[in-house]
Amino acid sequence: MKEVDFSKIKTAEQLNDLCKDTFVDYLGIEMVSVDNLHSIARMNISDINMAPNGYVHGGVIASLAETA
Image 1 (tube, rainbow, N blue to C red):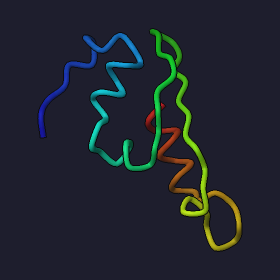
Image 2: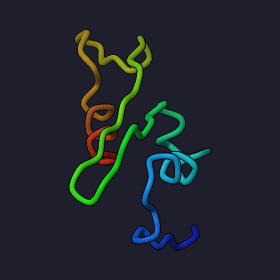
Image 3: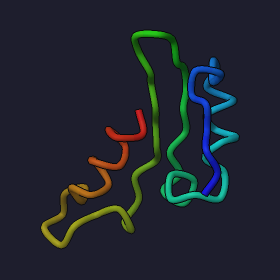
Image 4: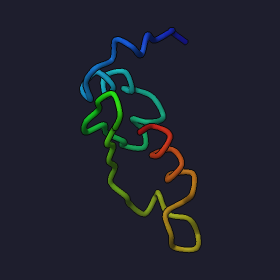
């Protein structure tokens, strides 16, 4: 695994490029915007993201939150 200097990552596009071919990419998480205090990420929810109880799986929610 390569080391990343996150201090050089300034844009959502840079983060999206960094996440290509990773679990984040597999889930379809996309960074929309980033700045020094905030980040906004989004993803489409489909049947594959659902838990057996009909709600979005907690692991999906945690992955989205951790990515943002």
